[in-house]
Structures are given as C-alpha cells and as structure tokens.
Image (cartoon, one colour):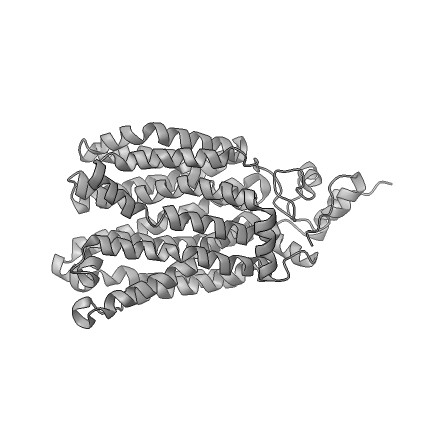
Length: 477
C-alpha cells in the first residue's frame, strides 16, 4: 500500500495557524512603525529642531544630521545581519527595537543649544548615530521575519502589512505634530512641545519588544537550525554572501535607489517642498501629507495581494513606469492650489504602492535563507544611506539650483536605475523561500514538491523529494 507522503510530511510540522501569523505580523509591523515614526517626527519638526540645536546654521544643519543616521545604517546591517543569520531573527529584532525606542526618547531630553551650547548638537548627533546603527538591523530583520512566517501563496498580502507599519509610523508622527501645533502656541512648541513626539517613541518600542519576545523564531530559520544548515559564524555568512551572492546584492541596491528616492521625497521632504516652493502653509502641507498617507494605508494590502496573483515583477514594472510618466504632471498639479496638491500627491502615492507594498515579499526572497538577513540588511542599508537619507538634502539643493520640478526629475532618474536592477530578478511569487537555494532559480532547494503538494511548513519535505526524485540537498560548506 503506497505511503501518503504529503500527510506524513504535514504531520511532522503543522502549518502556522492564522493567530500565530497575525502575532508575527504585529511583532514585525510595530517595530517598523517605531523606526519610521522616529524618522518622520524628526523631518516634520525640522523648524523646531533647528531653533533648539542649530540656531546659527539653519535647516541645512538639521537635514545634515538627519542624513548622519543613514550613514551608520550600513554598519548596522553588516553587524546585525550576520548575527541574525547565526543566532536568529527574533533575538536581533529584540535588541534593535530597544536601541531604536530609547534613542528616539532620549532626543526629547537633550537640553537646547541655549542651555549647554555645542554639547546640544553633539548629543543629538550621537543619538542619531545610535538610531542609524540600530535601524540598520531592524528593517532587514522585520522583512525577513515577516516573509519567513508567511505562507508562500500569500506572502505579498501578509508582507504588505509591514509597509502599513511604515506608513502608520509616518502618519502617527505627523498626526501628533499637527495636534501639538494646533494646541500649543508657537513659543510653547519651540520651547518644549517638540519634545513630546520623541518621548512617545519609548512606549511604542516597549510594546514592540513585548510582542517580539513572545514569538518563536521563524519556521524557516528553525528548519535551518534543525538541519544544521544555519551559519556557524557571523563572518562565515559575510564571506558566503559577498562571494556567492554579489549579483542579488547589486540588483537589490539598484531597486532600493528607486524605492527610497520616491519614499523620502514623498513622505519626508514634501512638507518642506510644499511650504518653501509652493507657498502652501506648514499646517496645510502636513494635512495634505496625512490625507495621502492614510489613503495609502487603506489600499496598500491590495498591492501585496495582487502581487500574489500576477507576480512581484509586473507590479514593480508598472510602478516604475507610472512614476516615471506621472512625476512631472503630478508636481505641476501640486502647484495649482491646495485641492490639486492633494490630488497630485495622492496619485503619486498610489502608483508608488506596488513598490512599497511588495518589499517584504520581494527583497528577502532574493537571497537563500542562510544569508537572507545579512544580504537584505547590507544591500538595503548601503543604498538607503547613499540615496535615502540624503534625498531631502539633495532635493532641497536641486530646487534652489534648478527650480521646483527638480524633485520630479530626480524621481524619474531613480525609476530608470530601479528598472536596471529589476531586469534579471527572478520571479518568486508563490515560490518556496526555504533552504540554501536561491528562490525562483534552479538551485532552489526542494521547491517542486513544496509547490506540488501545497506544503507550507514541513521538515519532512526532503523525504518527499527523495521519494519522487526531485529536489536535492545542497550544502555550501
């Protein structure tokens, strides 16, 4: 009598139930929200931070310090990523969220330049360094954690909630800033009101820490450990990564150029642009941004879910092409008045969603499991440091040099760079991301039986593979 290998395999390791999956989503999402809440609050409070820390230098100094934290992100990726591949995603994510939330909260306690002189900006820079170092491991870990918990056929849908956390972080920081500005006088806001949003970062981080410490590590990482396939040393992960996986590192770098120039132009630089270049008041520009972001929050899951059906690459091709074509028209619309500014910003935000909503389904799947955390963290953060943190500063300089359409042209150039990176990225929608093979390629470990039998969390897949003569065990010693 033939053995039902599918049932036997499923009996070894049951599928992740939806309750556990939702907890994993929440644990990833709140850390991401905390990260981007901090970056959003800093950007939205540029005027107040300049007044308290750089009264003689202007906004350029504040934006430069904003970029400083991004310079440290690659170092954070290099340190945290290999540790995450060696010890586990969950342990590193617990550490990064502590550092992020404490670093954010301490900014609210720094005395002003008027009180302690040059030490005020020095302390601010040091805390931004801590922030950059910790976030260098946070985003890659959260995306990897989310992807490895999600079922293959719904990875786009569940992964989109990580970016929902991004938008909620930005929106939360903006909403708190708006409420404070409406409730306090200008003098009160400049004196002490600006500190409140930073202090809120601590309880956000504590909630995230609680959720993360209650979760097991991902099924994919636990499988690597059970089969003795996890990296045995962090340096080993780095060596394997740069020797064997330099091509996905380069492709991801180029795609992140497009992603981040669009992201930081739309979500952090836009208030400065609208008030400085378009003559829209600071409050009105904040409201425009908040409306657009909340619409994006409501619709982002559609981008993720659609990518599960049509693939990640078609979604990216559509977004890159649409942003290239619509950048100048939408920036023109934003200059035609308040109502048209809402329309122009929202349209750009919506065509950006197919990129943003598929990040955690697309990027982690570009690397095999044993170097996934390091691969994504390092490549993503090097690109973010070069083109994300500098975006506001570059845009501000270009507007002064070439006029108010320069941010649109900058975004168009970024979309071309992203398209170059996308060309040879394997399609991974519905594919397994387990094992030491690169997903979507011929060396993907045990991919055929996993798809054929619809098994999601199975340590016994190797038995199925051997039974039917497909799949192979690959060790990169």
